[in-house]
Length: 183
Figure 1 (cartoon, rainbow, N blue to C red):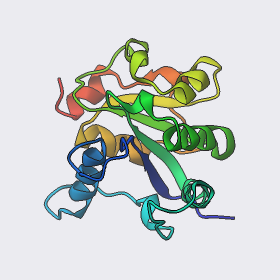
Figure 2 (figure 1 turned 120 degrees about the vertical axis):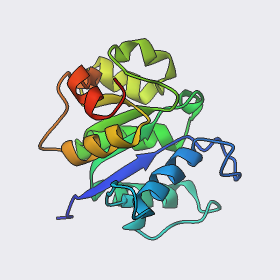
Figure 3 (figure 1 turned 90 degrees about the vertical axis):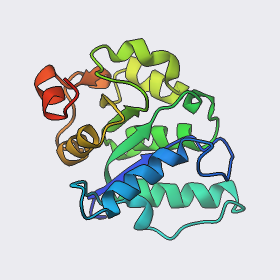
């Protein structure tokens, strides 16, 4: 039995190596917040719990590593940018495995969005794997803006034994948004 205390972070890298040219920049921002002693933002990064694989590794080798990381995760942060829906390999696989096998909640975070009260209005950004699982009721998802305080709260709050309210269309109320400094 694996100890599930990590947060798995998924994003669409668009096949680019430039860290500023894709959603990898948001993953790096999460890591920078975590590493900054002046900022209250701590999490166990599931990507650091399993040895990394090189980009040239075969797809099955990469998927085996992703499964090991997800198996040790209590939740998944899915960074949903404008191109995430276009990913046809690893993001759909990560979503499918997280929901279908690990039964962990997804924290869908949207760069550039403010207060989210109607997650369905963002459905045009969802990868097909997420949309399908929201529609069939198998995914537990909270939809939040890409905001340090909102992410910190969601990563600490949600896990396999504490799922977001609202099934696949969960969101925070105005009181929470006031605490995050967004209202």
